[in-house]
Length: 373
Image 1 (cartoon, one colour):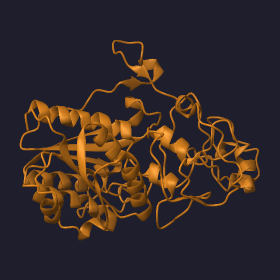
Image 2 (image 1 turned 60 degrees about the vertical axis):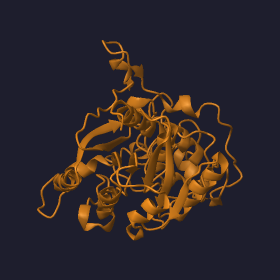
Image 3 (image 1 turned 90 degrees about the horizontal axis):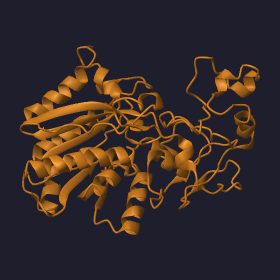
Image 4 (image 1 turned 45 degrees about the vertical axis):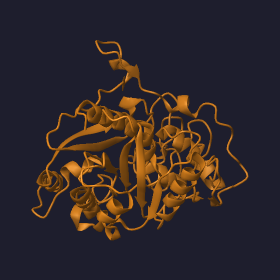
């Protein structure tokens, strides 16, 4: 069994949520590769604060040669313990257009295979949206893209296992569903960890589950956010606890009861309801303190459960399971919409909740230790 820290490389690192969990499981992350400049600034700031000896590479991953990493970190083929990352998922998302491999971002998934072929890591750890399971390929057949991906892993002698995991099942107060793939070189004795939490109605049976956490438990203890911003974009606030809700939006939010959503408020005029239909049950949602959050998404910001404002990035971090010692860089924007680079809310929504990454990384480390790899 190894006594030294195991070595890992992070691809598509984003704001570093997956990296927090992997690092806390005892892995030494040699490099983090990320294209978004604000995310790279976030990674660099935390590396400096927490003294991580990790090289941050701001680049399009398609321009990186894996052998460069092998040479720089003196890694022979097969010596890397873990290669991990969450490639861009918009092309597979059920909430998007699902263009799959027709979208350039969809093909980035296969960059992991390119790196694995050269580095031959002992384990590959991937996060994706569950829409990948049904994404169509060139043959217009559901699930074809995922089948191709698995075949490419098997062609370089990896055995993959996968599972759709709900974040709330592992103590994160969020009903976020994501696909996780764990592929081991050669045979696969890896098994996914059992869940620790469940809806309260499932906690009285044979299994000793803890009840799902509500967001009120994790938001508790935060001070009032800065209220002087009034809808302006703010840059690089270390605490990230900034309220940028425009005054007009506060009027709209005040009409939505806790746990409900804007489209359900049929008594409001069209101008306040923003033209939403009764089917828009997940848009402009006011969260409930005693329930887990809906999935944090890039396209909108949820309402605070009791205050007439949007949640702050720090509150998003609490809901996602980030430690308070972690900081974000980049803008905090008051409005949603299409932007070229990720603001602080989007950095969190795009990332893997650190507790989920940690429980899986601990399971991977246990597997490596047991196999004496």
